[in-house]
Image 1 (cartoon, helix red, strand yellow):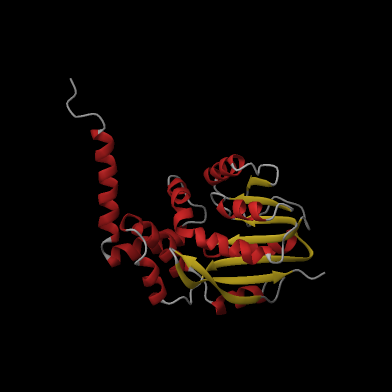
Image 2: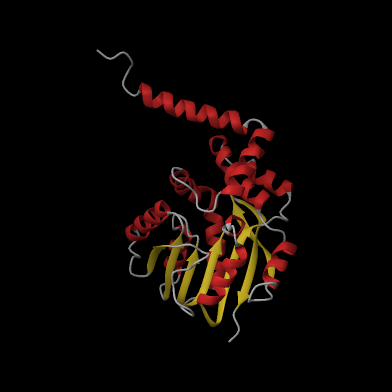
Length: 263
């Protein structure tokens, strides 16, 4: 004879997790303390955060993936591209579907993210075009001058040694090659963030706060980016805002950094 009905323990655990999330994110000081701590310490998203990120990324970031893919493919319809920090593979998949002559290698520091991306790309029938590898942006596992293009979305503020990553991007680019680095725009106003927040379903608000708002708080200003690039092998960059749709709201949500290796 069962003491509790079937599924009671699972429901109790889920309810407890949701209650803990609500307790943290219902108070601004607790919320910001947690967000700042996570952003300071995390370079690769740990399990089980990877699974939650994979489930929610398309819903919260679909418009961002589409905007970045369109921007990159205006110059890179064919060739060989490396994506650094590709996560669950949504952007690599978007690129592969739109540009079938572009060979893509997606790299991530998390083994769990790599598994998710491999599964997603295989199920989409793009396994021959899009390869997925495990690797660290500070020590890219490819020879010099391997790629025509390098791309990164949403990783810059996670890099613990961005100077080393820029050195590696420069190294693996072919002469004349281009790199696009996109990150949440620090200059985006709190008013724009609030417009987006109002469109996020209440159950997803904690993940929006931790992901989008946390990234915004941790991201680099344009001035900081220029200082970083000026001391890199690239020495200079084109930096500008990119308007993207987040939850159906168009905002200047990304900073686009365009780098080129001399020929």
